[in-house]
Length: 236
Image (tube, rainbow, N blue to C red; front, side, top):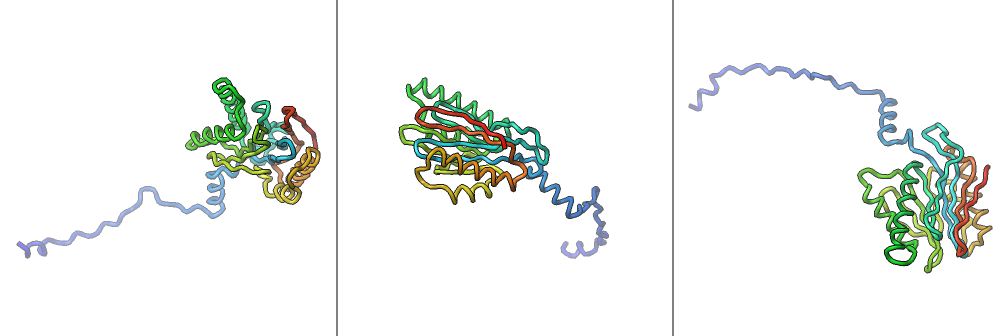
């Protein structure tokens, strides 16, 4: 039986012809495709700053709203009041910022009614972190700074799109971060006065605007002190 196998003729090997031949795209087209896939062509820009000063917190963001290389608005608002002692500042998609601000405001009111006291800054930041983490499979495209004043004193927290939570005394998020952070870090010190904090934040945002085409057109402030929240705005 073992000798029978060698008596069968060998069939010729049939070459395989691909039904859809692969075409290698030019390198420049591959780069454009990778850029579109990662969203670099439409990611909105911003320069948003948060600073702790003596007796309060200052949140600020410039006004320009962009979509790629197109300026959609010169009066967009990226800082929001959440409670009488907590605010939030964002960089990213305007709609996602507004959703987060409304969600925080609603949850803070529910917390106050349920517990019988205002929500703390730390608890509100943790709440927002949970909201962002629960949306991790369909994330809200925004970087966020939560700041406020409570019995623990003034504080700010930085969050990314997945809800990572980092406490700090000053922070910058958005496309102008590198330039603004250099100015902010050089001039920051403990126990800044309100006027010193406003001057430092304005200088850092203006430095970012000079180098970041997706930031500009003015500055919105949310100032949080023991007297409550004050909103201010200025044009450049």
